Length: 215
Ligand SMILES: Nc1ncnc2c1ncn2[C@@H]1O[C@H](COP(=O)(O)OP(=O)(O)O)[C@@H](O)[C@H]1O
Ligand SMILES: [Mg+2]
Image (cartoon, rainbow, N blue to C red; front, side, top):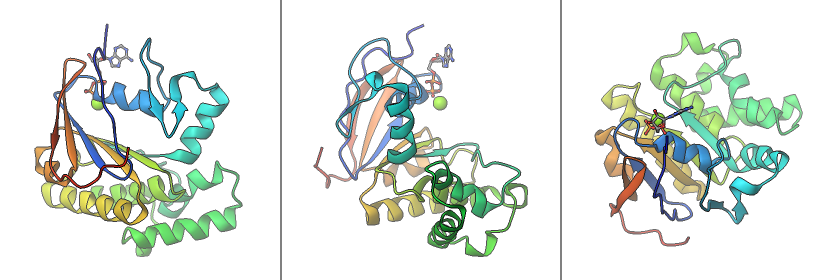
């Protein structure tokens, strides 16, 4: 099965690139390759000067740990940990001391408007709150690239809008690059560019907000 067969795409630094296409067209496979979770059979994938598919396992782990943040459709918070502990996880796996990690996690929760929920378990949060906590977790270690796979698909319209606004504001401030996989047409206007995918290929790239041009 060829999940991808003709993906040719440059993503500029600090832009919000959306990847849009029907279910099964290869979107998740594409971002899995970009984030060194899957290896392609061929082709080139370069991210921040790294030849991602050919990094050693160790280097791939470090690349994910330091350079990438993830936001998922199903939030993927650890159920036994509080919001603040969940946000601290990326720092703890970097070896940062718990006290410092928890302090930075608390600051990240402030930036997503969830400071009053730091002690809550995921089961005690609404979908929108969970996704904001997940955004704090994706940003707490200041990655250069945040990958969001269907971040608004489990949220109602207003909440999805809020989540995208938050993502866009926070990443614009820090110059972070965002790749957002979605088929939620209600959020298309947040994109700087949209890559339309079908059947393992990128069909065309549509410019929505033509402002960023630094590869
Ligand atoms: N682990 C897997 N093993 C085999 N086929 C897979 C696997 N994951 C995805 N696929 C197939 O690869 C294609 C692309 O899947 P995916 O990248 O998940 O699409 P999307 O995220 O756009 O819905 C689909 O046809 C899917 O069925
Ligand atoms: Mg998918």
